[in-house]
Image (cartoon, rainbow, N blue to C red; front, side, top):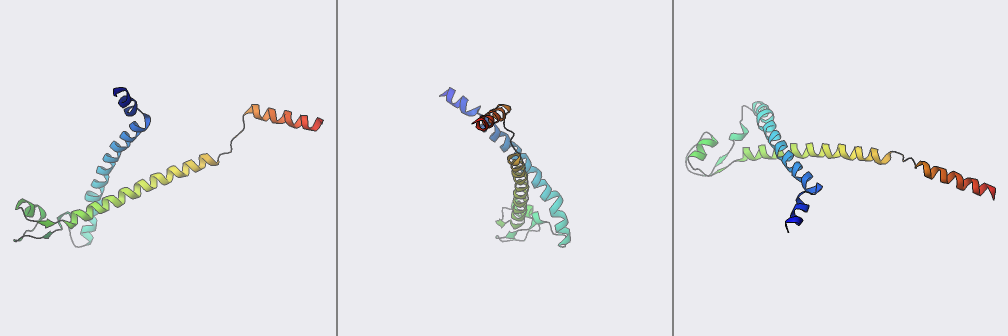
Length: 136
């Protein structure tokens, strides 16, 4: 059983998948930072100094000026601002992955379109065949 597991774990596909997952997680963190630190602040500024991460609906009694204050008080909230940030993260990540896969597909097409040169041996055999046909 150990040998079977070792064979599975060290297979090229499993290692490639592990590397992809690790890079994907790191890429996700970068995109989250891009959205929350670079994209959302200007959008919030344009919309009248709105902090999207601080947008929420309070379902409890009491008034809270920030999401953090509501959470510290144990209030039940619907955090639609955080949801908007997460949706934007997803859209940007999906678009970036789309662009990478699109480029990979273009490169594959270019490889497939390259004319294949027959081996020298095949060319010689074809010439011999043509000469033999002419002799008949």
